[in-house]
Length: 231
Image (cartoon, rainbow, N blue to C red; front, side, top):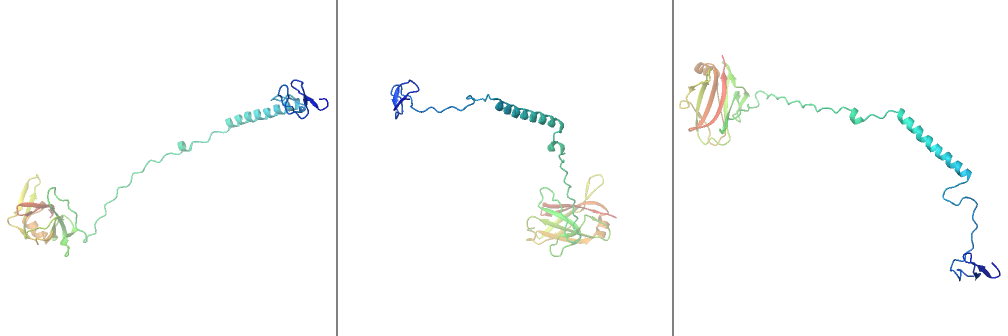
């Protein structure tokens, strides 16, 4: 620099002191900032920096080695899913049959397929519903022999023929009461009818054994049930 001119640091051309760029080469006319002492590259080269970096790398390497050693000494945590036994489902207990209270509930008879009625047996009849109660299908001398016929529709007649058949030990059947000789009176609009007698008279007439009672509406078989007479 001389007087009021400034030499371009790029081409050496003299420019006015107020010039922002060189009039010869166009380079910016800025004052060069003095450089700091020390390395100019990305990586330091002075001894103190290299010593600090080496110490840091050594500490990191030592930590890695210690961690590897400790991980080998400590056993891995057990897998809870594998260690815990899966409980096998327990079988649900089958519900036990609850006995019907004697004298209050009529026995449930399974209707013969194709028939519209069922016959239930018991030691007495409910005076309101006319259903057999105190359920049983086995009668001894002195017992009250009661039965009720239940239909899914009204009787629609006033009389129903009844037939009783003995089941012999060899499986053959013997009619002991013909439906032409025994008639049960019913109410046409009703669906339930019942009757009671003494088992003693039946045993005297038919003896002991297993029997089938059949109820008819005209010529149509509408209900059937089995019972036993014992000595």
